[in-house]
Image (cartoon, rainbow, N blue to C red):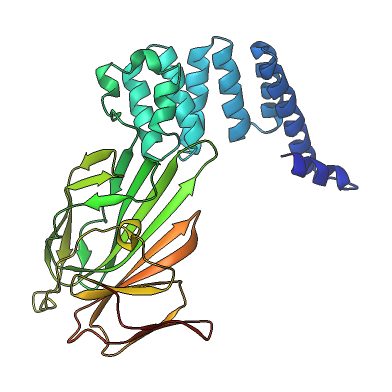
Length: 352
């Protein structure tokens, strides 16, 4: 916001909208300073002045709700927060604050419902909630029973159903509160007409918080029938969370034959599979090969594999390394090469 202010000050003749933004920014800065100084009623007036020129600004509305709550006007704070979420349902911090206002107001059922959405969207960690004075007195209430005893929180988003043969579908899992570098997902082999194409594990860390991990398994539908994923047990070696199975219904024309089934599919994670494998290396794994490198590396195999699954680890959305599981060889190759940017990084037989 400050950068915007300097930009507008540099304009010789700011437009009406730019003047509006400057006025709103000044109101926000004034309100924030008053709120920090403990003058909640004065802060509320300042935020209202900004809303006079920008009546639907979600940030000003959220700050006015906060000032109203601090001034003891919880009903106003709740109403204002709900108005923001009606227009901006993904504004996670407002949802978390709404849960706090509802808890202060004694509406624990509604507070827990809003908090559950905030947790599933990784707005805050369970550790944050358990240490928040707005929620601490109520953690034993049945409405807050969705909070795990540990700090690991897992949410699963199943593929949309039904889908047609030949489609690609995604199974998504979000895990917050991860402290260790290896995340393990244990589940039975997948039952149903799909084949696994790729797995992406994206680790995101916020300052002073534990890591949040987004997992995406991508499949191709190979025939008609029901597909079952899970049930799952997700853990880091110390904590573990059980998650119920999810299902998918696949459709195909009556005369369309299903593709031949391949090897069993297990929902592994890249960090679990890689272990202590070096930057550019090859090792045997389940009658196949695990080849580690970077996206863009060229892997030479002879004979070639009939199946391959790509596993990728990312941090903050940026690729860190890639692991490819080559499967269904007629015979394992005696020599494998990994080439990066014209340079041979690995050439030799697979490791044990």
